[in-house]
Image (cartoon, rainbow, N blue to C red):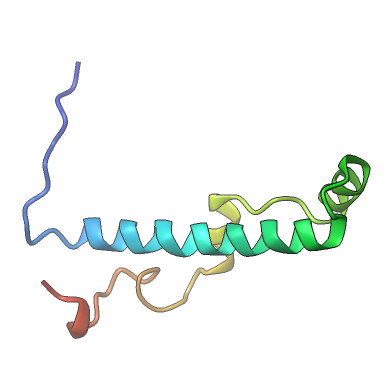
Amino acid sequence: MMSERRHAPSCRHCPRVRLLGRDFAAWRAAWEAQRELATAGYATEQQLHDAASSAPTFKAYLIANTGAGWPMSGAMPVRFAP
């Protein structure tokens, strides 16, 4: 069994992962709000909407943002440096 490793306070990985998670959550929430607006909560309309525009996944988010700046790039700007 592997023990949980703790990152050092100066770890550059953790802030990047938190920012990616927050950004994806906002991306997904925008899709869900648009879905709710388009379907008014009706199950049949939701199924039709989902068939036309599937729910965004984290993988799709990462692919869509490939080549973007921080936090996707991994090169932390000075303003985010600990």
